[in-house]
Length: 490
Image (cartoon, rainbow, N blue to C red; front, side, top):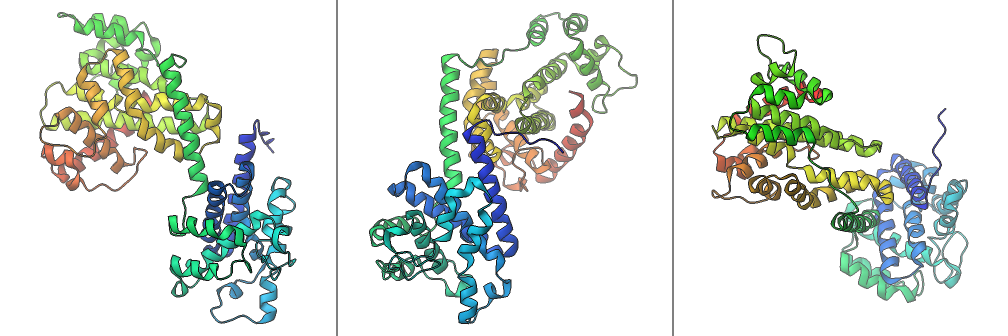
């Protein structure tokens, strides 16, 4: 059996603790699906409340959150029919249910890292006047975290009961809880509790997601600062690409001159030959060298493919989680490149190879961010979906910066800056519209971080370009076929 990795930092240890807690919540859900959402709401409300009003020390807020997630885990020992019964329970059955805090403490007691959670789980049903259970603790003898959990547990039961017909509005639930202040609930907490619940209608944001967002903003600020100060150097344009651009710009450039440049790099040469022999470009005879590949592909298409091959190296990471995401982004970029070219061909636009390159590099800023993220120590503790969402929001500025350093002209930078725009007009340049539509098209195929069912009749860029949905569907099928044939060759 493989030896497990030992956590290298407090952040990694916390990540393991939360993973275990989430696994236990899944166990609760298997027993009773209702309890998962109940537990998550109680956990987030309690933690956010404690944090906002400084009810507990900062380092103890996460303990309150974990206790909220796990406060009902003892219910796994109770028969499911008791939980679902609509009619009143007998006294004997109530006694059985009231044992769940003790059962929960017992279930969790073998996990040393949840030691601080145990008293909050055991005492979340104690009452401030001493009438609660299981130990009839009174007043300040009840841990403050347990007092907070007790309030939000009651609130959630009133607002989101197992039987929806019995649900109370937030106002009616607060009236009922306020009536028990000083008896069941701590009078000293009630005023802030009432204000907190009124401000969010009883369901505050997910505590962990909020913490992830805060950490994410901190890391982004750090990364951007390092870029600006020169501590993180963006990648340079590969030498072979720069030399190829110089050759192509010459008025009388020849395939032989271009071949000499490409053949300096054996890896790129082999991959270019493989792409030239793929079903997408295949001719009657087999291509065996770079000199034969260039006439088949054309000078500009050769440059695009070499740039794609060279760029593939940017999509590498030693971190497995980031490598998976980068692989997805690479296939997305390639799909967007071919989709852009197909759209340009159907519209008979000039310089169609240019659209291929625009589609290829439209998300290059995401790669800069991901590579920087993978090297930030705290990045390893973040959820990949949170990283994806934030990279999506911040990639445009860095992509624009990289293209300027690489010497791309204004129309390429314009595409980077506006391909994610929400609104377009007939005055929007076609390059932006084409790459926007290609980007959306990849989502329909599932070659994007956003896999959604797209109604192309409602896509603004398609309307302005006057492309019918049936026409776009043919592009979808062509791109799927192309990617299947060539993606592995780059």
